[in-house]
Image (cartoon, protein in one colour):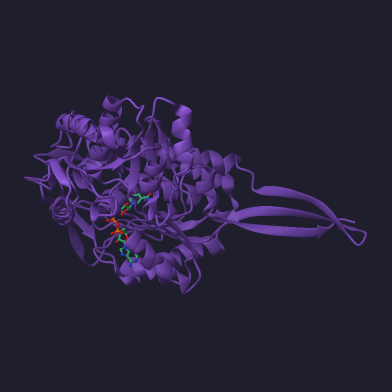
Length: 501
Ligand code: NAD
């Protein structure tokens, strides 16, 4: 694959199916790469032009994929052979490394990820999940001894065995397709599950590329991994209600998460949810304001604000509000944005015109509600760019402080000391992440402990890596992805008791 004149075109290899106009990739169902009857367009968000076509799977395709996954789970040795699973994950890792540059160009062209970010969480970090979970497939103990108990003179040995949870339906959002696919696929396979992975309608090709690598470069048996893409919600709905699916792992908006939880309740599936966020960065009065302003500005512009854990509320000491706003505005002026394939670009486009309209509408309503627009608030053409935007004097109960924007829009809210900052930070239905800046690390950690969220950064500290559990409190989700906790999401526990004498 290469990018030409802003358009990605396929250059063969890796079993990729190429169509007449750009990229047409295939679904993976029961070990076979198949065309769908219909296709839908996928766009390059940096230009707004059509990038290629993706197969538009039907409910019948979803049913065939679930049937294949069920058969592979119930009738093959996959779930019982951890060594073979680790070997297959090693092959997948090698295939990802061998095709990294093609995946990079595709991720830039379809997701609008900057080249800079593909060296981090958009591609290279996610690839590391695969050897990490191959290691856990080899080494993580599956048996836990509980010891013996005596009942009426008889000794009973008790132990717990962990086994695969079964057939998994994995549903992805558009923003970090490689990270989110591999954070579900790698632990599910390590645990011995089989899986139907559905990519997001905005970024189908990136997910289909993984399916094609699996089909062409690994010995993962037919049916163990199935990959679908579709333009509508019917395929997702079919997966979350299907009686043969044991577990749903979903990343996306809280609104969709609620619907999925309700849909899965009909067959009492396990539901793992990674949902939205409205995380707060708290600046305490002893912090280095210049440094924290820089962090706040660059954080909100990372992937144009389309990250669930980004700190989109900046809580600053009331008496320093104006100084910090000035410093953040200066830092935002230094954010380079534009062509995501340029190695110097820090911020790329939003994913779609629809997303851009949503962001702009929220900024307009924030100003109408009394916030001050310090900088930004503009659409930038061509493509779906939105200028880095700063709103100051934001009311903590207003829409812009309560709802996820998913754009490069930072809301500054004044606070009156540590207790007040904690109260404002917790005034949210979300609880995904947060950050605190202070000259005193103990004081910062004490504040962080009082915030109800799944992850936290102290003075710019990084918590995100393959071995670190990630997930949300409150309406930001249920469960943890990555780390050992991420493997255990895909395991059942069977408790045994046996008379030993
Ligand atoms: P979305 O909820 O609109 O869609 C996500 C996926 O759900 C898509 O594949 C979509 O086709 C599918 N879907 C939609 N309705 C469905 C239904 N009724 N049944 C089954 N599937 C359905 O989310 P999005 O706009 O693609 O992504 C942005 C959202 O994802 C943001 O809210 C963001 O915070 C969240 N997100 C969370 C995390 C996290 O780890 N917590 C990570 C990334 C993104």
